[in-house]
Image (cartoon, rainbow, N blue to C red):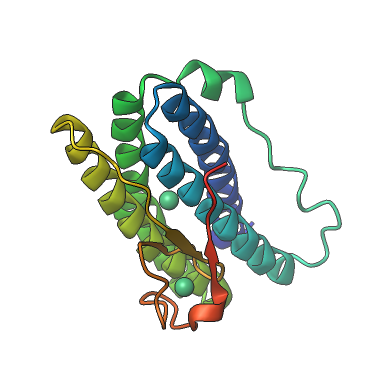
Length: 191
Ligand SMILES: [Fe+2]
Ligand SMILES: [Fe+2]
């Protein structure tokens, strides 16, 4: 089987786990009265859902003969629940996860997609990788603030519905990652 198909599946499972994990982290942050951090976790969870969508789209085009092509999306929910710590630990874990994705996982997936000349997958991996860099940067910023006991005043958070780029405070005119305009940004409510 093509390495790229395997890579797309791996990425979709990884992003599905991250999406779920961040909702649980958001709930934990809320419990600890860290609503600003909960808000960021919800936003990044939504961003991971965008990655799942675009990877699935690429997979369905490449692997169109397989009618049950979504059946492989399985992960251990209990394990994810068990790994929820307090918000500081969760931010650490989130930074590690995002860093692994952009430094290792997506880098090697992009290489394989280039080798097999499957642009659709390469593009999807590349957008996700760039978005993960921003996610990790934002988690780092929030972890620093938390360490310095700074408060998190309510702010607006926007997510690009094409690439999962997360932007704090102002809705950008143009997405710095995928180049789509402001109407593609979704404002994330604090659930
Ligand atoms: Fe991410
Ligand atoms: Fe974008």
